[in-house]
Length: 322
Length: 261
Image 1 (cartoon, rainbow over the protein chains, first blue to last red):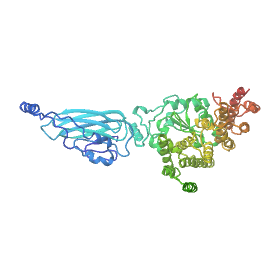
Image 2 (cartoon, one colour):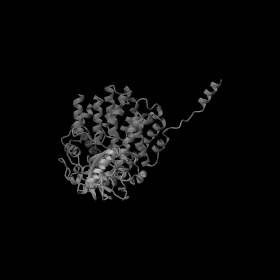
Image 3 (cartoon, each protein chain N blue to C red):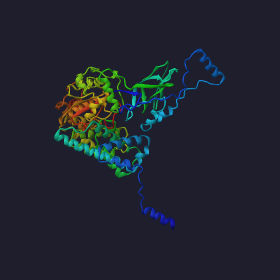
Image 4 (cartoon, rainbow over the protein chains, first blue to last red):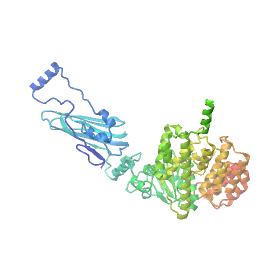
């Protein structure tokens, strides 16, 4: 699942849970009768008592947090942390942390602060709520932020005990959620949004969606740079070579020996069949048509590397010799 | 007297300075492909921030050796593919090879590599490497000029089409560079004659893709001696266009004739 929770102990490699102790934040005034309120105000004025500022005494630790330090940190009183498991995630994500608090003191209100901290990104989300005994809720969320290593969901809950839950990746409501998780788990440098997936070819094409989609799901990422330019190449060539491979979801890509950041998982690559030696002529024609600018400028894998097929992609800056 | 003794000892006992990059060099030469792949990624990252790493002689030697190793691996695979039809080089390997080629090509930057023997090995490994004839890499490599002529001629005599494409592609780029005065070492008259003769021979190659690349080479070489053969190709070559694109031997020969006359 694509979520983490913060409320107890470890729950698998991708989840880390945190316990909440007594508050380090000054408790809110006891709700009492007008006499006690008056006395409290009098003490503040005469005795110099002032509401203390909220101090986030673990902010530094968020940046320095590593797995070995995590245990001591998540036992910090009144602060909850969450992180994705090892290896740490890189890239962008949508994050939602919600904090719920239950007061252990029937006479105290509950102030709850929920914050999202990213290593390398500082505090990116914040929410505050004041509730009454016995519970309060606050939600902080961030839409698509870049993060370097660790994500901390960070809660102050006054004198209460608290728990937080967070969501890392948006739920697309179907297989696309699992596909997005494959990008994260496979450490692909890019994770598509739900809306980046399609179930049809975005341009006119000589090949069907089922041919373009070489993955194991009914969804694919297909960029019009590859579908449109390849249509141009094949049309100019004058006959239609067999289709070998288009979009691949990361798990399938790994299974067929694709590179970790293969252009096939980015949806801007295609392989056409140019199977045997006499077809060097076919490969040569396709290469020239794909690279001469009339149909865009593709990166084409050299023939020596792909004697059985023609690979073209539209990444922009091509590898040396392509 | 003392200083003469020190001088004598200094010259007679060469001090082998340990490379600062010994571990990296060992990994680049590892027999395990994954180790080599990781080492190449590390070296690429390191050289982006510290250009001096490629000035280290042991690193230079390791990079050239690595490209030679990978070239041999690809050649072996190509030979095996011709027999079995099984394509066993993965996409990951292909991307890795391009990284190696790019790193080795970086050694050609002025002032980086001074050892003549290593430079000769580097040129050979680059010219006989795996690349597209119309890539930026090939255009840049042709700027070497005269020193790579024997290697280019060797490419045109190889049995496989892709090597010949690269050979004729480089011939075209050498003449284009000569005309633009962009070659590091200009072509000698005899080399230019040899290259033109090789390109003309390519016009008679049985493979249409090779004839196409040879047509491009004779055109860039402005070789009017090729006109009779081009006329024949333009009229009766079996390779004709299949669609709107004019890329067939007949079309290319006709276009070359128009520009040479």
